[in-house]
Image 1 (cartoon, rainbow, N blue to C red):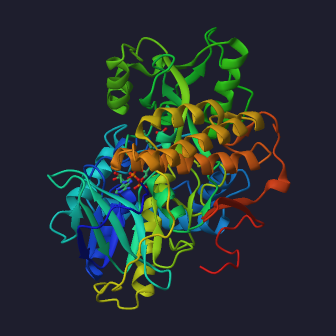
Image 2: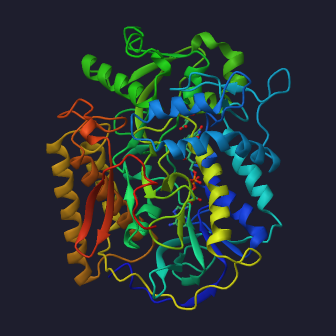
Image 3: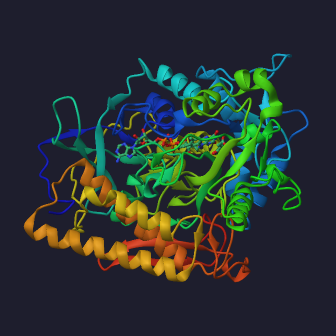
Length: 557
Ligand code: FAD
Ligand code: SIN
């Protein structure tokens, strides 16, 4: 059984298809709708992506003592030499306006005593520049506001529809998607929707690992779809591990409760089991160093002391601050029997964010004409080797607006996006399905060999084990004992993405940002370049981009 095999039972047409209903997909759909027909497709309920889980907030130079130039400097430092400066400039310059648009769409940020937007700090920021809502429920509020704004706009919505593959026309241009319906009595139905353009906004890939802050839907589908469609994928080795995730014991699996960096921003600090503040002296910002530095600090002290976790001490913040600023985190901790008002919180790093993804230019265009990418699935170049805290929501907003601009000019009919290409062909490649029972196995392989700490031996083992899973899938194909359906497609996507991460991580023989090689512990500036992964008929190939800029490579777009 191959991914391309199910025959379509229904076809439909629209102007532009947007896949994903997080901050990126919702922003594109809302802003694009005045110009033509838009179909928003999402594989679960509308609010089930990472967006609604966001805690700390959204970064932008909003304070009078701040500036886009300072936001730029902090972002470049966090990205350890791999950010595309032009893309970061777009992010920080257009950021404040993007936050204002979010407010215009109904988002209510927390306010200070003077009625201004209350701002907090997180790792790597030298200023208070993170706007938050509901204390630590920023994503829930943004998601609520954007979903409310979507009502009555005329955006068509398919919930419980998984986008598996891109359809292309005879020229190689994106011409639609193949959807697999999941619920509402349509389970198993296959629909081919034709469109003039497709926007991937499918979020992250944290479910590649055993323990992650990401929800169940974050299975890297967009990256896998883009690879199968022949698009370039960049910087995948830079999977960011959030330093402070609630430790739920050895072997905790699935989505784990996050303890926001904003807790440290408001004064909590990390200690070891002897009560020592081990981040002091490691970095000028100590507990508020960029995320990769803090994650490494925690892992190093865990190794030195043989401890399974470290502790985050916020007792001195007091009950009032906990209740007012961090109600979500307080409730999650108490649910698990920890009271942060009276005791330190046990924490460990866990997979959190994909700094890499489908390579785009400054207007979200991928290397496949007609295919755009926005939000966590995209690699715009703003994050480099390590994303600065709270730059992700901002990226989704800023680049959504740019994609809307691009779509209007690329489709050259500002008043109507309504006439799709008439022919759609399925992707030529045939891929073996991975048994969904192997999902846990993929996560184990990635956690053991391609997690926070990596080395050549482990990554080679990961490569071997992942290849063996694929070979087993291919054998099963003869006997068709892998049931095609959403669990198998998600497992297959996870496998594709895992294989790509391992290939990129094995090749990058240095330590930089969130890519930490035990066998190459230093940064090596001969590696100040990006790796691009592409899928060909013989498998995944990895090539180097010899420039740090993703947008000025001179390659055709
Ligand atoms: P998502 O919000 O993840 O949405 C992806 C959508 O795509 C979902 O609707 C999903 O169902 C859908 N989808 C996926 N695959 C398919 C498919 N095959 N077919 C159809 N639909 C599909 N960032 C910040 O800037 N500030 C923060 O404070 C912050 N806190 C965070 C806290 C947590 C716990 C987590 C997990 C992340 C946090 N992040 C934060 C990161 C940020 O939330 C995400 O990067 C961002 O929300 C991603 O938005 P998105 O729209 O790209 O994707
Ligand atoms: C957090 O609140 O610590 C998460 C912020 C982010 O991922 O940007």
